[in-house]
Structure formats: structure tokens, C-alpha cells
Image (cartoon, rainbow, N blue to C red):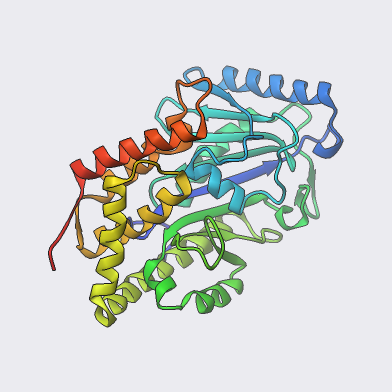
Length: 343
């Protein structure tokens, strides 16, 4: 396969993204930054972003909230960070005029973490989104860099090009056919890891993150090309596994899809983790023709019911009120946009 992503695999691939880690050469590593230096880092980043991007909207966000705010935040936690990063208020949320969302985290393991997610599989394009931001945030003193090791980071596994790529995948077929262990072993030789987005291996959510784990000695283009090729191959095998799954027991597969859609159309309370578990079932139903509707509509609903969107405009929304609002949106949107097909 080539290095460009030109195949429609939206039935399997939800999001792709990249994360760049950078540290300033003139500052101590983040765990030794005091409050004044943190404030200086924040204000300096804001000033440089405003100078470089005249049309952006900057949103300050605290990361100490224990519940993830969006799918992007879940992927970041799963793939890009080694620690919880909860000890300081240190995040900036940035939205470009185009609507592409970036996340810039300050002092979370490294001075800067710059992430971008897109709704297709071209991680090279995602890299092109974060690189201008990286350049804008470079100070006159520049980033910490070694001729022998590359960009220096708080974790040795990110040292080198300090780039991590990731995909969010719906792997219902491979999961239910018990083929994921073999896939994980195969991916290790490419320095890639496959992990469940939320919960444990015993949980029901069938959304998985595929991400790169070693950058030392590799160029950014090589890392992303290998990741992209493996994601495409995994998506094709998922399609084959789904067909086999349906052939083996159509009724069991259809039952899980229809139960999920029934809950989404009737629940009175819905937390985000439960939504994602049901969402993965409905997505599999859409991909296989057991549900009538579009994946585009489904993904729009997922964005609309994220904690980030539901809490927008509310200063103090209780968890119960959030679950009530999410369930109300699900009942309305799924009733309007989805229906099961008789078999």
C-alpha cells in the first residue's frame, strides 16, 4: 500500500489523529515548573497563537475534570500520555476557523502536547494541521533537541521525532470472532499497540485505539505511513470478520444491534460510556445493513452528546442533568435518523 489514504473505510475508522510533544530548551522539565513559570508558559503560548492565527477562537479548559470531555480527549488519554496529568490547570482548547479542532496541553508530561483529529484516515493530513501550530509556539530559544536523540521528551519512548499517530476503530467483527489477540501480536512488530478505548477486555464497547509506540530512529513520515498501512489492513480484516460473524449467527448479531438501537430510542438517562458502547453496536448495524441511516448522521450524534458539547453554555451542570439531556437528544435523533431493517 502507498502512503496516502484514499479508501473509504468510514464503516471501520471513526477518527485519526496525531500528537507532537515538545519541550523548551530554556525551561526545566515540567515536573519542576513552579506556578509562575506555568503562568508564563500559558501566557506566552496564548500570545504566540494570537499573533500567528488571527481568526482562531481560544478556549481555556481545565484537565482536572475526571470525566473525558470528548472522543478526542479519550483517545489522547489512551494513546498520547503516560500520566494522568491532573495536578495543574494547564490546557488550552483551540478551534480554527475551518472547524478543525486542536488540543494544546501545557505541562502534561511535556511542556507542549499538540493534538489534532480528523474524520478520515489520512494521518499525514492531521500532521499538516499541527505543524503550523508547533512552529507558532516555538520560542527564540527553540525546543530541546539533541543531535543524537532528536527531540527530548519526558518519556524515552517518545524521544526522537516525538510524534504519535492514532486511529479510533470500530472492531465488532474481530472482537466477537476472538481474533484481536492475534492482531495485537502482529502489530507489535510494527511498534503499534491496539487497546480498547474505554473499559477493560471484559467490557462491551467495541471501539479500539491503534497507535504508534516507538519513534526513535524513524522519521515522522515513516511512522505515519506504517501506521496508516496497518490501519487500512486492519479495516479490511474487520470487514471480513463481520461477514463471517453474520454468517455464523445472523440472529445473535441482529439482536445486539436492535437492542442497542432500542435503548438509544427509549432511555431516560444515558452516560457517555454507555452511549459509546451502544453506538459501536449501531455502527456495526449500519455497516452491515441491519440499520437504515448514515454513518455521517451517527457520528454527528456522537459529537452532539459528548460531555464537551452538552456542557457548553452551562456553568454548573450536574451529572444527572447531563445524563438526562444526553438521553433526550438520543431519543429524538435516533428516532429521526435511524430504523432497523426487518430480516
